[in-house]
Each structure stands twice: as structure tokens, then as C-alpha cells.
Length: 181
Length: 307
Image 1 (cartoon, rainbow over the protein chains, first blue to last red):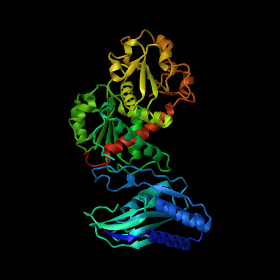
Image 2 (cartoon, rainbow over the protein chains, first blue to last red):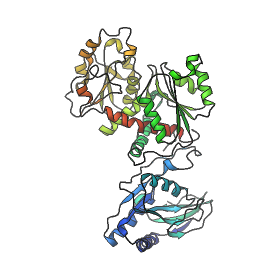
Image 3 (cartoon, rainbow over the protein chains, first blue to last red):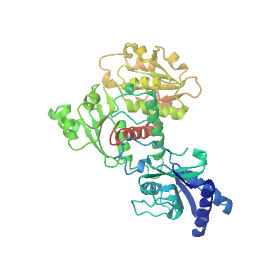
Image 4 (cartoon, rainbow over the protein chains, first blue to last red):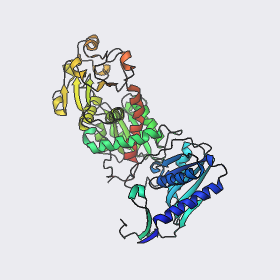
């Protein structure tokens, strides 16, 4: 097991991504965030917090559960627990920043895109991730990346966030290694 | 969360309190899906569901068909009147040949109790009971539980009075089982000839006097008088039934609600003013029906293998 990022580093990454978002959006009022559960929604809230403080804009934040849109529902034997999707704003014409913790196969992102498009027609969707594993199986590229960690299918990346796990840290481990607690 | 282990949904008697809660929790998410601009999800894409209705039905059939479409499943409907059953084909043959066309799930309604079970033992597809004789109607009871839980936040400690023909009613049976499993207390009321012998063994209290039965009830659940099953004179006259058991006024219990599985015989078991009263959840029952059936179809048809 190896620590990839500390609390301070995660903070710096989110600050950097926030300024990149600001740099690329002329009209920040059009920006809304949608985070993929679990973790992505928390990261989206943090980005919102940083950018709200900076610009004074009250951004909309939505949370997405992609269970019903998974492409492997017919292949898995155990049904995943369904969490709530909460998008309580009109996505039409918005510039959506889709947020997830780890970009792995990109199939989650594919499912998230389908789900968002069922809510309406945003003018643009961009992808922000904390970690890019460089293992994607679909032609989907992130627009904002925290850290690139090329890793094999035998490895697992664990993200811990204060709101859920009580601390901020990212670890990488072998599949058979126990999880950091 | 533990995996869903039932392949079929034949009745509420085989579900635990925890499993009923799971269905109601999943249904809550589907209820939200129904309020989206595009109220459907691709969860059952590529699955084929057959609605096999040997008895006439409007609401249940439409509700199932819509649920299947909202989950992106392909659905087809078989009804008795336009089929080879008329030419003398047996039930099992009919279903076997339909299954050969690659059907993943069957929703069946039949006038004989036990047909869903019989089919579930003989075919590979999953089976959902949409009402079998006077046995059970689990999806109706689940949507009633969902509607009540949504309204009262919890089912524990609620008092429900079920009024009408308990004996011939599969809705009543499934609801008695469901509400008592979830910790509500159930009172039944109706003409004694229409109360099955041994009702107390189902954890229901029998009350002959309508006024007493509904006095403290949080939910007044009115059953339809099934004209088609009343040919052998189980009560003297419809007028007498209306006088003694028709719901014509509210009870004194604050916050009580009226429910009815439909279709209503207006002016018989329920007056129009009561059916359309602000505390009537009858329309809401229809709305929640789609969400609850989506949850059931998702749990039974969503994954390839059941553990």
C-alpha cells in the first residue's frame, strides 16, 4: 500500500482545478456542478465552496447515482444498492462540470452522461476527476485532472474523504492487500 | 446490503419485513425517476416481459405495461379473449410456447389461486403474481404500503380498517399480511358471510359494526364489491350493504385517509364525496403503483442470476 495524496495535496488539487474552471469559463454564472455518488458529489460541493467564495456566485450542485444506467446490470449477479439522484435545477443551457473521484474504465462517466442528457440539454459538459488511472475503455477524456496515476487492473485506488470516511487521503494497493483504515 | 434472493414474487407471505422495506425503499427512487423530464431509465434494456392476463384488468395491466416501458424493457400483452385458450390449449402449453420466444419475465393474472406458483415451478422466466383468484395480489398491497408509508412516514403503529368482501378479496389478504408484517394493526369489517373463517389467525381483528371498526382508524381501506362474485347471495341486497357497510362519512380520527384499490362502485361501497375528499389517496395509489412495480421488476429482472 502506498499513499498517493495527503490532505493538503487534495486541497491544492481542488484549488488548482477551481482556477482552471474559472479560466475556461467566460461566464461563470452558467456553470453548475454534478457529482457522481459516492465521493464525486462531495468533491463537487468542495469545488462549489471554493468558487463561490471566490466569485460570490451561488452555484447549483447535483448528485448522480448511475445504477439504473450501468451497462453491466445484465452481467452482475448482485444488484447494487440504489442511491438517490438529486438534480434539483434545470440543466438546459447550463455548462455542467461533471465530477468524479477516480477515472478508471470511463464506463461510469458514459452512464452519467446518458443520465444527465435525460434531464435536459446542457450547452456543455466537462469532466473533472481527482485521479486518472489511464485505463479507460471508452473515448472519454477528462478536462480537469488532479493527478495521473497509471495503474494496472491488479491495483485498487482508495479515496478517503472527511465527509464520509473521516479523513482526506488517497492510497493505492494491490488487490489482495487489505484496505487502509 | 444483502442480495435479493427471490426469483419470483408470488405473494407477501413469503417476504420478510426487511425485504418489503427494501422494495419500498427502491420504489422511492423510482418515484423520483417518474418526476424527471424523461421519466425512464435503461435498467431493463434488452429484457422482455410478458403480461399474461386471463382476467380483465385496466389499471394493473396499464400500470405494469407502463412500468416495463419506463425501465426500457420490451413488453407484450396477452389477453384471454384474443388467444388460443379459446381453442382449448392448456395453460402450461400456452406459456411454454410463449417462453420459447425468449421471455425473461411473466406477469400473470388468473382467476384460479396458485397459477403463478404453478408456472414458477415449470418455466425459467421469473413470475410476478398480478392477482390469482382469492389468494394474493402482492403488487397492489406493496403499492398500498408505499402510499401509506409515504403519507404517514412510517407504518409501525398505524391502524388500518379494511371494509368489504374480505373473503373473495386477494387485495385484502395481501394487505392484511403486509400491514401486519410492517407493524400496523389490522381490523376487518363486512357482512359476516364475507369474512373468512379463522381471520384472527392472520393477525386481523374482526369487527361487525362499521362505526366501531373505523372509529380509530388511520386508514379506511374500502374494498370494491365484486359484483361478478356475488351471484350466490352472500348478502341480502346491495341497498342493505350500502346502508350497513358503505362509507359515507369521515371518522373522527385526525389525519385519517381513505384508500381503495379501484375500480370504485361510486355510491355503493364509497360515496362520491368521500372518494374525492381531500384525504382520499386513491389517485396517489395509482401514481405510486408504477414506481412500486418498477422496483419489483428491477429487483427480479435487473441482475442475471439470483443468489
